[in-house]
Amino acid sequence: MIEVQATFLEGVTLIIPRVFEDPRGFFMETFNARDYREVGLADGFVQDNHSHSVRGVLRGLHYQYPTWQSKLIRVVSGEVFDVAVDIRRNSPTYARWIGVRLSADNKQQLYIPPGFAHGFCVTSDTADVLYKCTALYAPEEDCCVLWNDPDIGVEWPIDNPLISERDQQGVPLSAINIDLESGHGKR
Image (cartoon, rainbow, N blue to C red):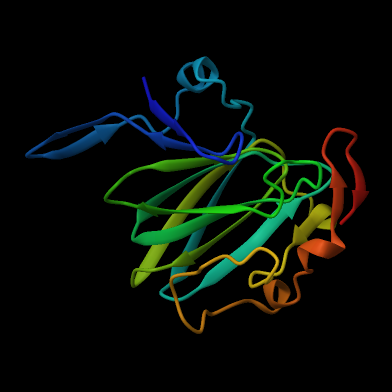
């Protein structure tokens, strides 16, 4: 069984797996559909992704629309500062964000449901981030919120991040109008 900690962003959940350690190392289940279903988290994952990055890389803030993806994020080497931003205009926590440190050492996971943008920055020499998605990647639906949008105010723990050209051209949150209930809006 997994331990879950709700956050102030409805649906964004920190997951603390059971880890069995001994002098040989450790064992843990990284995903069990039954356990995730029992705590109310999506289990229809259809794609796994692996991102390797060096210190200072910032990726995000990404989302896919209108075919939303729930994501289950974990770090298998190094450490990242992982961020979820509520982009649902009709939400009481619209434009608010949460940041958590995910690392190979703490083995925690972050579950991000539809309606949120996601990003992370690498705070160790390198990091390997694995994440499961509930929808296949659709390049034509790939969207990006500006990583340093002052209306969001994410407090990234790095100076001078390394950012892709695509992410540098993200749009401000004010230019996005998504009605999560109907699935209509502009991205």
